[in-house]
Image 1: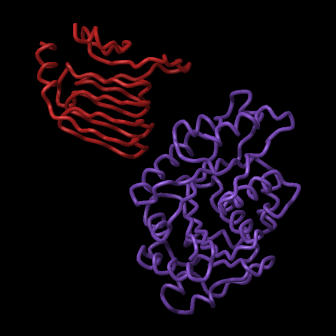
Image 2 (image 1 turned 60 degrees about the vertical axis):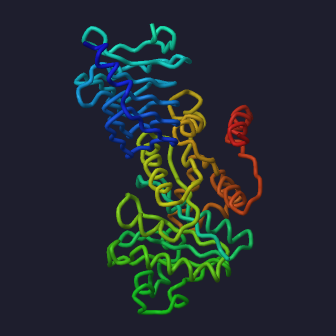
Image 3 (image 1 turned 135 degrees about the vertical axis):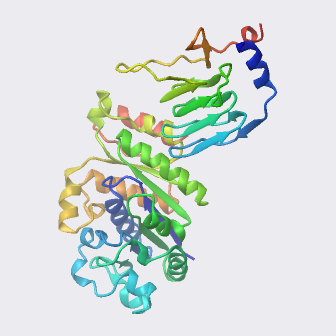
Length: 126
Length: 263
């Protein structure tokens, strides 16, 4: 089921943003969103498809906003205030600050919950 | 032709008025002809910080309503012949001046003055929009607090949307000791989020409180560290390259912040 939806997403239209989204700025798009810049705290992206951030993701993002559980969120530095995929809402754990890895990460739904993994292009295709 | 610079922050209480007063006075001390505009209508402060409150006859609302001539409303500073203040009205509200009127006013002042420093009200509503309408440059003031940095980020976004493309950052009230112990956001942390050019760092300094209450800008106080920081900022606005000053005796921090500035 997920696989089927993910394939649908691949053919969707994509919005390319060549700027940093600052606090208070909001993007709603019926497709994928690619940001060449940061998404700062207080900014939000709501996309029907995937969200890819070539920079630091610190704001709120919602991928697969129209219910696509196969949508993913990828960022060079994945540190969102809140991350939503489909109908799932997640946030970083309270308390101690998490040290971020140097490599890009991807968030997706696996077995009904959101997981964050190292982004590996080859394994993604497999 | 003069340069119109708006001093803004989003959040209140981070030091917009103090920064405006010190930058204006600092530029005047360097010999430039400077006009300071207080656009915080209803909550005017710049005249108090400059120690000019008792000289106010007309204000910015009188000027835009043509109750008086621009020259009648401009108050000459008590220390510098080349420094003037156009005070805000205290009995009106922000809607008394619109964007069009601000643009006209700034255009008129540009013919007379080298620098026009606009003290912007807190917030992002009407008062903010009018204050930035006539500006060509913006200085964003923030303090090392998450809330102030968040608002600064919002303001930078709004400035960019309004065509003020490269605002400069002033970090106010930094406490080196607390940064060192990890209890306060460092300048690097702030630049990481805001990603704009750093114009200067002003240390937390008791002399600012004293000078603000006395109506004597700290920029004229040779012994004040904050005053030195503002003198450096004024010099940088005129295009001079001034390295960031040392905020402590040992000098280790100096190298660190200089390396950010030279980026």
